[in-house]
Image (tube, rainbow, N blue to C red; front, side, top):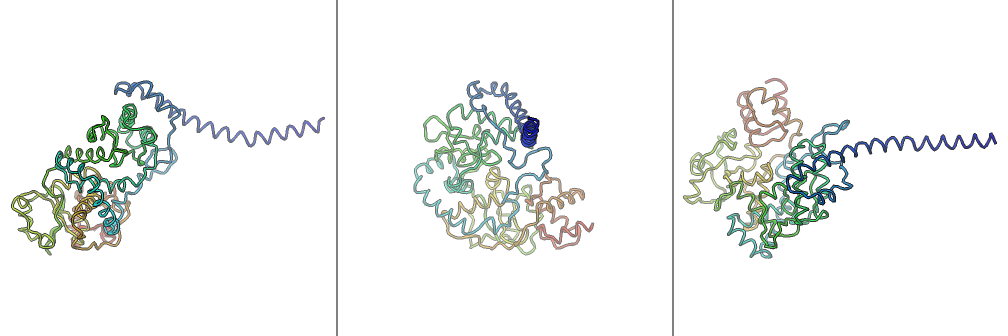
Length: 417
């Protein structure tokens, strides 16, 4: 009997040794999820005020769990690495604007122009936005619907509201998503999104859909998930609401004069196209501008500094940039739009072979900010203002002025020049 008692005690010890850590670990996970559940419950008064019913709130949040694997979250114990590197900001133009991708999407866009000819004509007539621009946005955002968004949209928005970097913004997005579900525009299964919560064929956050969404197919619902007319018209409406000007091109590719001052390449420096041409900028392929075009205001864009193609960009360029704050994104959309009616690629080839790491560009921005040369956001992204500030630094340091973030310039900064 004593022998049996010893064996039983040993078995109990083994069971406890295996189960107790699992229980404790499970308790911590349960406690974290309990805090999340409590947080979601605390949003009810806000949701109720916004018009969400109790039935909708309960049914959609029941069993909702956070997704701690999402990037760009503020979690204890997790290294703060920030958002995933966006291709628009870490790839050189030649890689982002791959000819094979542009050509494939342009061919598909031409086919879709025929398939949705009546819808696109009606959109263009109503909003004044070219059909090719809207198709290009659709192609860039979800490959004309082929790309399937990988996340549960409501879960993403809830997690970002709970432990994201922009909690207040995502509280609103989460409640707006509940309103979309309540209204029947989309089912929970259809409400898939990117890690940042953008959803639908043309990638809208819920709040953007409420601001710009259009029921273009006339079925009484704004449906950007399965209704191509609604998705394309909503994209057009967003551009109009951001200031789209009918009849104005997005940009003109030009050859810059040899003595070009690349520090002028910022949105704040605007001149008429006629004035730019008077300073030696020449439209590529012999394009002749009409009188009304010459009077239009434009800014200089040199994505690779003095290397690679140069562009004179209109106000519509910056309107497209509201969709995605990246020069390469707008170049992709604008060029893809052009390629649906013209087979020619950029007249001047891209030349940069590599892009500096985001951390290096971040260090450059901080260095230039200390010198009083840069006053914009420190984000590690070499946009128009960063490139112009680099040019100003190069002037002051007696370096070659090319407005391109290279390792040589970074070393010069680090050496205190």
